[in-house]
Image (tube, rainbow, N blue to C red; front, side):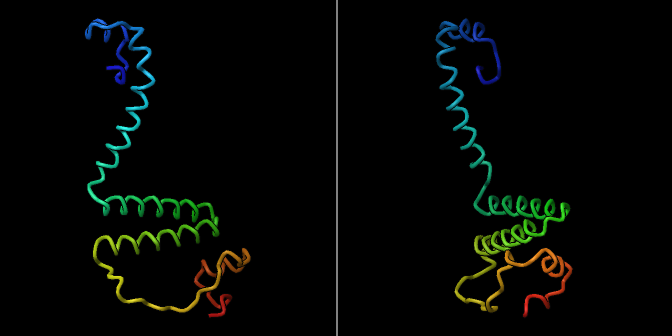
Length: 131
């Protein structure tokens, strides 16, 4: 009732207590509600798989925004995060078995590239990477 915004006098009358007592308990109820709401959100995600998929959606949204803003450094960081989420999704869903390691060599540190080099990489020109 407190959470729903019902008047303290109305609640007090219904439960045979005073509005002052309810006023003292209101901060505790708010803190307990926040904790309960977090627990409900965690329970709403039926499984770890659903949580990973939610994380994937968020990472892809960040990637889209970075690309729209032409912020290539943030876009590359978002790509790394999406890759990590996809790997985790594969492990959680059982599609990716981690008993075989795939070696693709050492990739250069993209954060050290100039803006011009980043633009070339974004356009699909990887010659500047020396691969």
